[in-house]
Image (tube, rainbow over all chains, first blue to last red):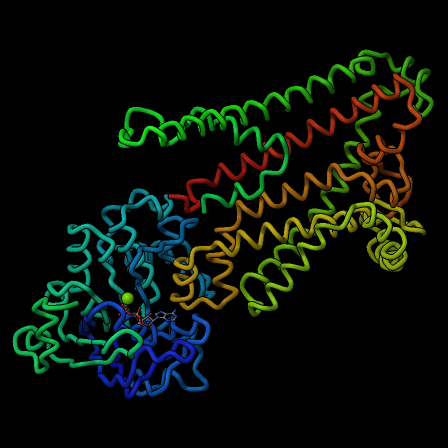
Length: 259
Length: 348
Ligand SMILES: Nc1ncnc2c1ncn2[C@@H]1O[C@H](COP(=O)(O)OP(=O)(O)O)[C@@H](O)[C@H]1O
Ligand SMILES: [Mg+2]
């Protein structure tokens, strides 16, 4: 249930604006890869190319190659909708569907696949996913309440439950804790540590300590200046990145000298 | 989100319902928690706003009450008259009927025409609005939106002329076909009238008339769907249509109800188009394709008013009162429906 992603010479454009240039990296299965770097260096842009979510923005496109276990995600016969069912995503701001109950939110992705599932199966999926997202004990008595009735941290875990309910191969998270309080943040970080046994996780974070705590590998992105494309500066084991990075700019960024 | 239900605040009744709580909710400058001590003018502005809101709110309530009182007072002679007095005093009053027996079929006709109009217009408007908001390329969307807004500006008498002279002859074969193939259903029982001066034709013309307003409001509501929720659906692997069903339609539901009520309000009160198209009758008939079965309150008032004697005028005003009540009831029902789903509306 976890797959390896290989990215080679990836350029991402918004119209004619080159936002991210020449990214080559490998993302290992069953591991957490953190993307760090100053604001505007293209972390979100790059992340969204991993499930083709950038394509919902008019004019956004990529060059280069991106394969998941050898399959070209951008092949002409590959449906972006199918890619997104394999590669789940959690956003910066929690976004449960406000008109759906907690249980319906969890089931949203499954209902999409048009699978008619029995009531008892549905109940099992809801429980498993909420347990998987460390939310079950808090919400098991009010599964039919609206998702928006939860706290921010709970909502974010509900979004994670919704993403893992469809059993994706990969889970992308774009600053999943940046809108949350410290306690909720810790809950999310614990959850990430558990989820990596089953999923390939890529997480964008602004928080150095968070990257150091949750990730196995860290990729540092940087930008030459405004209007310049973002680039991958270096990528290594997280421990190496935070102790003895090769690049001077990585060291500067990690030690808080800019960004 | 929060302003989608407010987009549609069509009738005095709705406006009053919204405006009423405004005074009590107070203005920003009010109350003890004013951290603007250094800015007395801001405080004054707050109080001015509060006063203005109170005045505006009460003005609307007073107007509404005045209309109701006026209707009741002027309708009183008819309301208190016996059926004999009505039959003798008014040339066009059907014999052997009470006032209620006179209003009833027209109320039925009014609601029937409006329901047909809504049944046709709401799905079509929703489709057009979704196309504009989520499918069409930007320039096409703008052009279409502009066109729809233009349609809203056409006077109803023009729609009436168009309905009689252009649309009705073209609908006749369809109605004839309907009565032949589906005639066993009471709704489509034949013979289909020719010319088709029937309630179904009226319903279609009314649908065209309320299409622009419903489409315009629905489009605005759909465009306000938070990107966040659209992306949530897309990231789960939703196609565009699935995303619309998951994020856009639920979000727009209450707005769509408001839009429909706006349209319904217009359809209920529409006079000219009905007057010009419908061959009137006073029955509770479900036969949509037969002439001389139905009449609407507004069209009847317009038809009889110029020739009516004082008791006749009073009777017509009584029917107007019935229309007023039903419009009010429709709006309150809509409000109730919207409020019932509030927990799930996303206004958190
Ligand atoms: N929808 C968009 N349209 C055009 N440019 C965009 C869009 N989103 C991001 N960008 C640009 O792409 C660059 C990278 O942005 P982003 O990926 O959001 O950076 P990060 O997530 O690292 O802060 C920025 O210069 C930003 O202005
Ligand atoms: Mg970002």
